[in-house]
Image 1 (tube, helix red, strand yellow):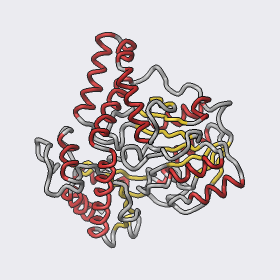
Image 2 (cartoon, helix red, strand yellow):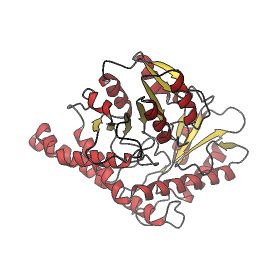
Image 3 (tube, one colour):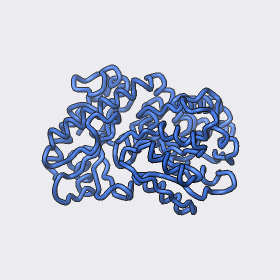
Image 4 (cartoon, helix red, strand yellow):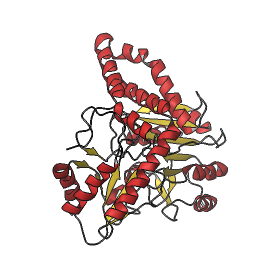
Length: 384
């Protein structure tokens, strides 16, 4: 099904990312079995990540899980500093805990909140639906901050002046659309108001600029995310990073009973990301996103609409049918089963405060080629 050569290495004439980055990404991974345009759901792990995960699992069998975990302590501490570096924090500052995923990260944070779960949380209408549902389930009352789809920091400033919530929650890059939100600017507004800010970086870390280093050290900031998306680490692993006085008051975040082999795999993925160069990866992914949007907007004009700005600095591309109802669940299944093209159908539950109808998400990585996009264009013309 796939146009990638069997050896899976080397640059292609139609790479959308810079050739050296595309070749490095492609050459460290098993060959694709299909056109993989779903990195926002789960990225393709490298051989090194797979080997590190398997090697730790083997070590557990040899010496026991707890002895193996103790032996991996230095590797995991370096991984914590790699997370800090992506956030612009000094090595060793704040708390970085490994958890079971982004959803678990928010659960552990709320369970560890000083004095019990917070009473109120301010957020925008376009927040990730499962996050707001979880806040509701644990009794956190929402404080809605109205405003445009791309967050307006001034709207948060006005909201915090009128009613001080216990925290502000911001999704850095949505699951339902690839808009990069001005999370650092919103966090600065929260810091000035003395309100903790909690940032969902599940779609952001390893994908877009997540540097929070300009905030003062006394600002209460919590960032959480996952291994499996843009970093292409193992599934079932995530992180919570906290800085400021709140970090010292939180209860335990990291559970000792855990998939430590997956954490070691995440450490390998973070090390690869560091070696490739986070700024170069960000620029490469932005180039992929821009090229995909422009080709889809041109090749599917009249039948599909690209939601994001064409030059949005992310690799997440969202398509909406331009006219008439389309069963996107069935369409996504046909793309995969009949055409060998992997995408995501986005239901409105991902952002019920903003979405009015399902959409199709396309999220390639550094190895995405123009040929991949042509396969998608041709398939969408056939299956709609």
